[in-house]
Image (cartoon, rainbow, N blue to C red; front, side):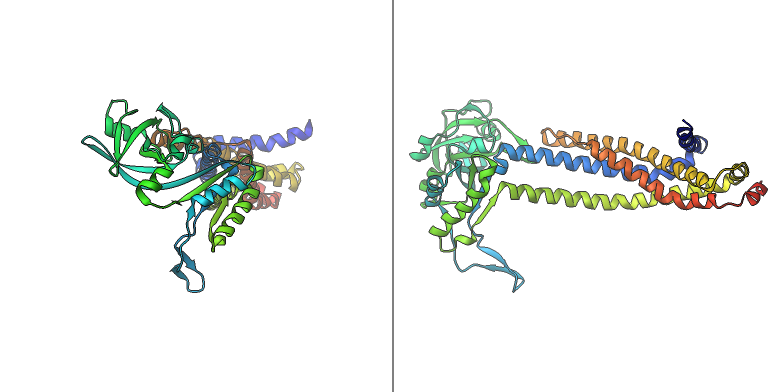
Length: 414
């Protein structure tokens, strides 16, 4: 019990200092408050961003996905330190699509995509649409929901049918309040029957509202006259098979392309890793900036403790005269410093939660998508321990000065 009372006494004195010198104490902990608040807010936003993006990415295949792209015509030559155009061109084709689907096991879906911007018209109305030419699995992988009608079917793809599924904005711009399903539109002059309308989905400024999806075989046959594909997304049966699927996809590309090794084959796991690295860098930069505020706040704590030592010189002398040890005086002032920082850190956590919640509400209003800031128990514990560490570090010198005061000289101080 005596030990507990000895520990509580410096805490009580620290709280008394906050109460007696409210303005001075507030100004001293302001740096701690701002830095802890900003770190908490930014880290909570980063964790919220990661959760939101990862949940969306998982719905689109996530770690089970493998992205395949043909070599870029331009590449960075490290020796010349500039961009150089290749003297050859390679493309993904229907042959690649077929062999990936037929020869690689543990594959759930193989989705080709040909993307371009085409004009679409209905009577006198026209709109510029983002055309995604693909197969019957594209809506599942992109997590699109059909509001009216249906999505393109396997038969549509096999027969290169002139059918289209349109986004909600395309439907409104062309048809107004009319039901587009069953009506005929022109896509770059080609007549297509609208078989479905997508429910609008927004995600960080991107949406499917201006999408126009048609069978990839139709675009190849009617517009380009070749069997080229922009990219292929392969969905493995589960994340554990994605690495092997990527290796086998590379093997297929080497067999049928002279420059097969130059094709880009990336797993969803690698894309997740890249995103996590970006978020981590942002959090480190934010933490570095907040660290400056912590330094300033720590100096403020040191200043107030030095002033406190000067003001309480006589009190220190009396305590030493009645037998207080140097270690008792030392720990009294160190604990007072820690109490100040913990108080600032506690308010800073609340400030950070407020910052994160406010920004998440603002993002929701802009994107119309769910977005939550996440303040984990680990983050709060880190903020508390960090605040305590600042109090300990910057409180040691003033406490040491207090413990070394000569009791006779201290009692002479009026």
